[in-house]
Structure formats: C-alpha cells, structure tokens
Length: 244
Image (cartoon, rainbow, N blue to C red; front, side, top):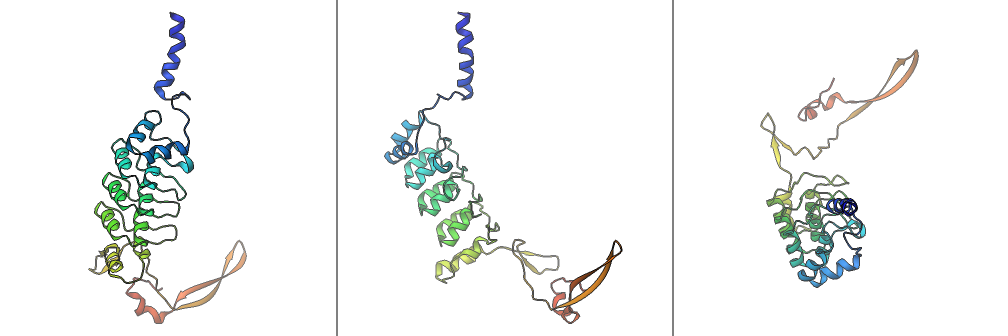
C-alpha cells in the first residue's frame, strides 16, 4: 500500500500542474480546422481533450482559425469560454480582432471588440486594428473601435497614424473617416492650438553654413555648423525658435 502511494503521488502532482506530456492528445492544424469548420458542437468536443491555448501553425490559436473561417457561432462560443483574445499569430502576427478586420469579417470584428479584445495591439508592421480599418476605408469598424477607446495617435512602423492611411479618393466615406480620425488639437498656454504630439511640424528655415575651429587635446579640429539666418528671425519666432 505504501509503495502504491509513493508511485502515484508524483504522477498526481504532474497531472495537477499540467506537466504530463500525455494529458492532451497530439493534434494537428487539420484537426482544429476540421472541428471549427463543423461548428460549435464539434468544437466543444474537440476542446474536451485540447486546451484553447494550444498553439498551431505560426502560433495561431483555435480562435484565429474560427475567425479565418468566418465561423461566428464558434467565435461567440470561444469568447464565452475564456479564450485568449490577445494572443498574436499568423503571417502578420495579429490578434484575432486584427485578422477579422483584415479578412473583412465585420460581424465577428464587432463581436470581438465588444467582448474586450485589445484594441491597440500592433502586428508585424506596427499596425493596430485602427490602421487596418482606416487604410481600407471600413468606416463602421473605425467607429466601433473609436467608441471603445482605440487610440488615433499610435504610429505604425513607417510613422503613419491611422488618419494618414485613409484613402484619399474624397468619397463621402473617406471624408468622414478623415474627420473622425484627425488627431485632436491641444490648446497651449497662449490659447493657440497645437496638433497632437505624435505629429511633427516641418518648417523650411533659411540656414547659413559657418566653419569654426576648435582645439581638442592640442589638435585643431574644423567643424561645419549650420545656423539660422537672422533675416528669418521674425518669420520663425512664431514657432518658438530661439536665434542666438
């Protein structure tokens, strides 16, 4: 009796901690695709032996596959069963929400937004869900994201805000997107408006090349400087540029 207890106790601990390699059957991408494609009943049966956090090809979860296959009922079932909404995977390393927008599965996208998906996660290109929706002109999704607090001031890898990716075709839809995505202006202490800090104002200022010589460790070194032309003093004082 004592021997049996000694034998089974470590096994019980391993099972409890989820460390046993035999707890879950080995599954493939085809297995999860088959289950999801057959619907909620098959998915529920599949999850009886496989956890929702199981990763497949390119780090995708079962939720990624449900989104790709446009299985709304399965997505709804998964979101009610504590599936990870923030996990990134796939070719573009996206969240399921980003995938839903990318694949134009808008009903699923709105469901994921309302179920608390992270809105500002970036994909491999630095794009948030708002970038993807904005550059494709998906106004309904843009509005849904903004209503839940998605940020308009996050730049992608190229430094573009969602506002800057809106198609410039000047259709009514595009005009509306430009209007609602334009970064907010903040009033400074002088009562003037400054654009959001994520944008940079570029100013063309006349410059003068000037050469000066300095001595470092007993050796002379020539340095080429560029200084602001005094004639531009009035023009640039409005931007807070100090001229020595």
